[in-house]
Length: 151
Image 1 (cartoon, rainbow, N blue to C red):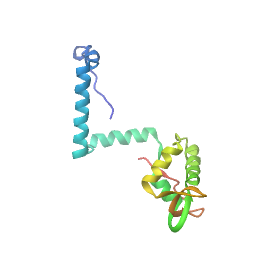
Image 2 (cartoon, one colour):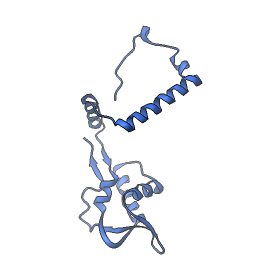
Image 3 (tube, rainbow, N blue to C red):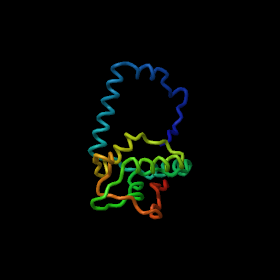
Image 4 (spheres, one colour):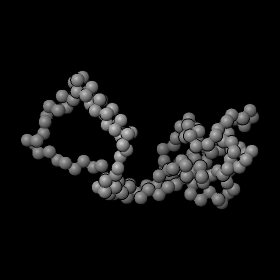
């Protein structure tokens, strides 16, 4: 959300930064953040029309396509009994896609962690880490390559 409020000189508190640096203030700020987080977890957050408009304007200005890990997996693998896909092959596909689009590349550890959230990964004695119960889609069926339009 853009912060569009400008404070007039007589509205400004020049000692506020110094006040917030005090231990008592830091403790209070931390407690306030924790209470807010608990409230967020309990009640969620509804987007107002103003927030939605600001987000849409930001996305339009950025004009970017975002990487979506779930869409990437849907685009490159399909369920298949008694099949395996080497995690290194999936990482290589992801890495090539990220480089092509100029995205910051996830480390192999981060990629592996994301992978384990979505599919079953097991260590195979000769193949190394593999995604079990899936196979690569045949060439030509990988339409979206993990891209998701940001609108």
